[in-house]
Amino acid sequence: MPERTSYDAVIVGGGHNGLVAAAYLARAGRSVLVLERLDHTGGAAVSTRAFTGIDARLSRYSYLVSLLPPKIVQDLGLRFAVRKRTVSSYTPAVRDGRPTGLLVGGGEARTRTAFAELTGSEREFTAWQRFYGTTARLAERVFPTLTEPLPTRAELRARIDDDATWDALFERPLGEVVEETFTDDLVRGVVLTDALIGTFATAHDESLRQNRCFLYHVIGGGTGDWDVPIGGMGALTDALADAARRAGAEIVTDCAVTGIATDGRTAEVTCDQGTVGARRVLVNAAPRELARLLGEAPPPPAEGAQLKVNMLLTRLPRLRDTRVDPREAFSGTFHIAEGYRQLEDAYQQAASGGLPASPPSEIYCHSLTDPSILGADLVRQGYQTLTLFGLHAPARLFTADNDATRDRLLAATLAELDTHLAEPLADCLAHDADGRPCIEARSPLDLDRELGLPGGNIFHRDLAFPYTEAEAPGDTAAARWGVATTRPNVLLCGAGAPRGGGVSGIPGHNAAMAVLEEG
Image (cartoon, rainbow, N blue to C red):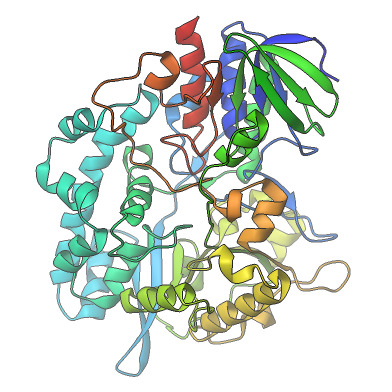
């Protein structure tokens, strides 16, 4: 039970954004209560022993860190760190009837050679350097704005100060610049994948949802690096919960919130264990849940588009491309069926109501970079984890029969991976204490049911560009920080807020700043 009957701030949801907000507000001397529906904090950013009798703590849902600002880690004194991957990506391919691939990483000279061997010249590598030099400059300008008041469109454009880059990424479909910049189909596909993570779109989608997804994937940390959380993703949310508690915040789990009533000045939050009062309510849940709690009409339906798979292996599989060590290939992002044409074909097949014939996906091995998630015996025996993220798997495909469709897609995805392996992946799977293969899969509908992600959308709704379309900042602190709702004292601090999405803590930080600015 909550210890008090009223608080300065009640936070609905104990995911990482809610915990960030709680820690900031409690450190500022506010009385804070966090109410969490599940029996643990962390939301989608948790570490779990997923397989019976196996000492392996997997990042079950979210699994890499890019958008978490070092500022938040430093401000809150978090005992948390990330480790960089030495290899960015490996993409297997077949050229002239022989297995080959593109390894990005291991130093500039090695990457240059890999591009030349795959494409026959240095043209694509030169274009690659120029293109990602541009995104790096973009990241340096945009990332710091994410923990500042929300800029207007004109302000962000002035901050970027590069009309060509603005036009390419904010005005035109991403496919246009990809096709203008690169000629090789596989290289084009590797670039495009960052625009399609959890986003069901084509390269030329006029909505530019692919552009927005791409932007968030290349600006993280001001570098665009995607890093491995040491100890798994749960290490971050455990550190955040500890920081919030140390600062005086109260956290109650197993307590679902069922309604919020407010007159704009004070609020009452009703949960399984009664009703508590609050000056302000911060909602760390999807906009769909916010509307339900306020009794408002729901927003347009959101839809996720991914298959998430966790595995434990007794060893990494050998590759058909014998020039590459599997320990390198799987330590970065291992792209499967993600050529440019393959991605378009998969989209069209899914948009027509069928599963992709060659499901695109990407894999990485957490334990190669951070073996601490495995027990000592597993490390000694050479066990490894694999995390697979499948693309172009929209929730609509699973509505008729979720379990059967998920199983069919999983089988097809693993079969696609097997085409690039010198041995079946099934031969490398570990088995749990009950003799079952150590593999689990989640469809968008599973994620909706387990985590409350609307339609399984990992961003809670389509990502938005990190600016406001208004010509001037809003007239309240919540509007200025991009966390306002229809109620003056109810703020949105979850991934569905502008500048939300991914494991960032940014909406939580911004909601806390808005509360503190208002006094």
